[in-house]
Image (spheres, rainbow, N blue to C red):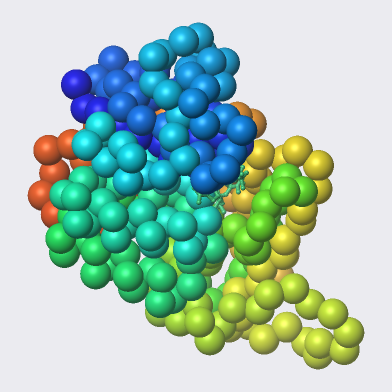
Length: 271
Ligand SMILES: NC(=O)C1=CN([C@@H]2O[C@H](COP(=O)(O)OP(=O)(O)OC[C@H]3O[C@@H](n4cnc5c(N)ncnc54)[C@H](OP(=O)(O)O)[C@@H]3O)[C@@H](O)[C@H]2O)C=CC1
Ligand SMILES: O=C(O)C1=N[C@H](C(=O)O)C[C@H](O)C1
């Protein structure tokens, strides 16, 4: 059995992650961590997540439970995720990171950490989105520079980062396939007298509304036809199942920074 800890356990993803770990045959919940000072400290993690008593008391510090798990699943916020990476590096633990909104320096820190620990980092752990990332590379390669490309994403009103990590990954997949650098060709939203569209740009549009779990569309628009590739998540359990799969996959993995394409065996050219 692989012992898993969930940090941010009371969050939207945290609760579903506790449920998914509990349901997995090859995993057991070793620990659940929430914010220091939370009223949930001392409560049972299973009862908090609505899956019945598990006998795992919620704590407010990762250091209190560092001996109680093999893999930490972290869907929290960038600064906290980096603190957790440092703690797991020292303690010799593996990590699954789903947190989005990391800046370049924070992502570079994950690359560095991959040299001394096994780590899966992916902005979207669903099978569907990881398939779409491959479909996008094919679409971009076939449609080429004659089609304008726009990435449109919608999420719930509570989401803190924009564009979503998934939208950025989709933009990167398309940019790579076309030999463009997303850093210089991305356009984030438009307003006022923008002038005509520069054909080499990749546009991003963000919608934040209600309880949308996560919708992503990449639009390839030419003169006379359009191709739209869309993924819609209707349940957070789809992300949690991916994270749990990644945790089980990591258990006997060598040090390295992996993504969900590695976990799913989807890397283009692998199949
Ligand atoms: N890779 C993927 O497949 C997916 C990634 N995500 C990403 O996961 C992240 C979390 O999303 P979501 O669950 O909606 O957000 P939430 O805000 O609901 O959850 C984050 C949790 O982290 C907790 N937290 C904050 N500080 C600490 C701390 N010091 N110690 C322990 N816990 C802490 C928060 O507690 P509190 O509420 O008290 O502040 C909160 O419960 C986001 O970056 C999101 O984009 C989301 C879905 C899928
Ligand atoms: O915050 C969310 O909810 C989600 N975040 C991820 C992202 O930023 O891509 C993945 C998913 O779309 C849900």
